[in-house]
Length: 79
Image (cartoon, rainbow, N blue to C red):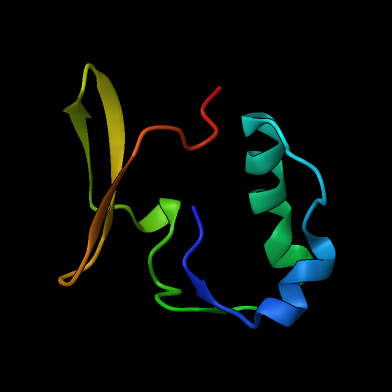
């Protein structure tokens, strides 16, 4: 998951020109911050600073957020 402010012209050279699988899309999302400078909207919100763990839709979710926004994250690289 990535919430950032970026310029489309900076991102476009790194995007595939063909349809990609879900796995490829996830990998691309994970590598973009290292390839393109982006300003994170809320840099203090990370997996390490999650609010709590909560069961939702039959699985454990990491709950990320602040007083304005929350996100239930079902996959955070736990294998």
